[in-house]
Amino acid sequence: MVSTAWSSATPLALRTAQAEARRVAYVPCVPDEPAENAAPLQWSEIYVVSDGTGETASAAVRAAMLQFETRWRMRTFGDVRVESDARRVIEEAARNGALVVFTVVNKRVARELRSRGEERGVATVDLLGPVISKIAEYLHAEPRLQPGLLHGFSDEYFRRIEAVEFAVRHDDGTNPHTLFQADVVLTGPSRTSKTPLSMYLAQRGYKTGNVPLIPNMDPPRELLELNPRKVFGLVMKPEVLVTIRKERVQTLGVPPYLRYADAEGVFVELRRARRLFRERGWRLIDVSGRAVEENATRILELHAGRWTEPWRPG
Image 1 (cartoon, rainbow, N blue to C red):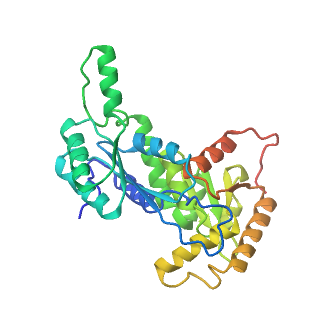
Image 2 (cartoon, one colour):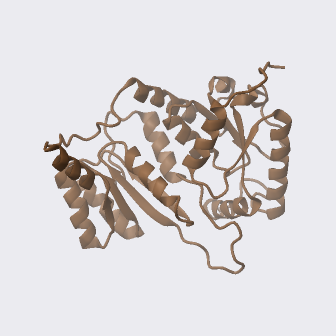
């Protein structure tokens, strides 16, 4: 089954990054203090369908989901420009009980999403169609109905592609010898949202690398030698991180290392990480219960802030 229709012009690095973003798109939003013996929370699925990159609809969905305290995942289907692709998305959404949100300008494809959704009991939301209709009525003009106009092949587009390629090459501590070229470097214990944040920042045009902190191992020299202005330490509330890691262990079958999902072990990891961040002068970001774009916005605000003292390598 084809889950996403890719254009032949879509660069491999962008496809890789978007695939990774679909797999772990957002930090799960869970209550700070879940009730004891409560039933496991279910993930809500939202499918974003677009005849372009899907960024417009994705941003709208993220903004809307900030209003809800629930665990959710978003999957993006880009370059959906024919009815057969629309049908495949609806069929998959029906199997997984997903909500479909779409920005498609082609009337036949949009109609197929709506009609097939009604047939299969899939709720659909057309974000763009009603807006285009109202604007056309107001302007007394016919829309071009040409897909992909917002995110065309501009200089900004290629800058973002370069940033995405950098993030892919520098994910999870790989290629540390060129980490100094990054605009932003994220570090922290396992499962603190380093990869999804890196990919999100890269798609905003920031060359981003991420380096995991592994228990009983010193951080790599290349990380310690970086300008501390560009390094951000990620942490979570211990109970949230334990929940995420337990789910990860269920998926993997075995933990990556001893005490990976143990509450006491996680607490020790986070305490050591916080101490390291203070010692190195790295700014700390608590990503608990926040969507990726919230944490990314905070990082970029701090990244753009002024420092009173110039940094000089030791």
